[in-house]
Image (cartoon, rainbow over all chains, first blue to last red):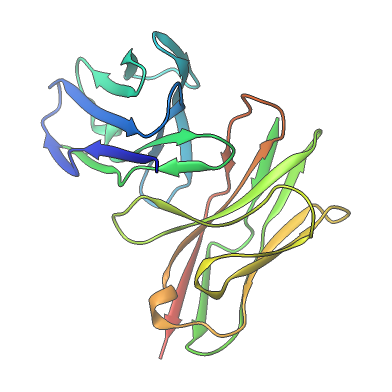
Length: 109
Length: 114
């Protein structure tokens, strides 16, 4: 069966520091992968999606970037975090339905 | 493009009472519809989905939803809620074509009280 792993679960980072969140999928090949952000009290906003290695599409301009160095690995990064980057970040892979990871709670202080 | 409207941001209900969480969507193409549940500080879990066929869809934890194409709605229902159903519920839609992305509503917080 397919599983999705996301880490770390929580992260507290100072403003201006770098960020790297990792997501890996097992049990499937060439999945479509997604990064969503959920700000406090708001819905889910699609940040990036990828249909293959090295193929990244950005949905909104922001301080973040994404990379897909391997088929089942999806990384969310930032060179310098802003306070507004705080939120709950969710990785997902999709066939018809989307399956989500357990999320990373990022607090920028 | 698709959009989803969840009219109720919060729904309080007493335990063992029935509940309906409303969802309306907009799309120019055929759609798949989903309901997800999110417990505090956790990821999203799929409750149920409508892909095709019967418009009444049954999911996990006793929830069901009915697809109404004429009213562009996909309301979620449960005949008797439990304290453990307290969570946030998201309605989502995607086009049936390949590569279509999932669009979420803003969520409904269901609070079950004794």
